[in-house]
Image (cartoon, rainbow, N blue to C red; front, side, top):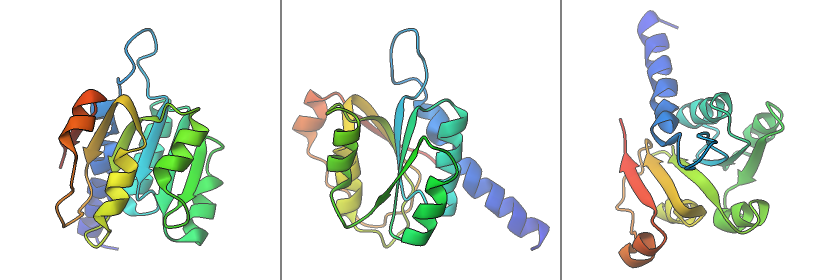
Length: 161
């Protein structure tokens, strides 16, 4: 691997360090991420997001993916990681069950360009009231967000490079 290729890999991993941009969604004495969803957690960006969330003190990291073998390996890194296989059940349903109906504090979208937008919408629906979503992935198609429920639940969606 050339120096340029290694630098590109570091950039990809660092790109998902955008978790830092949403690292204080809980007002009060605990300014840490409690529950984070990394949508596309088995890719280069996603794995960087999972590791960053753990390093920043997340108590639970939900990581979605399609490759069951990679998801199994990911789940063995740390007991706080909960792998979620895309397509079996809605991600939002699983996260809500695991989070006692409250949802996750933050979601980092790390999916590739060919990922279905329904996956992103499902992950946004896993956010708690006041939850934040950051788009660092490359989903190519428009993401339909319903503004009224988004406003009422005080969710936010930001982009990052």
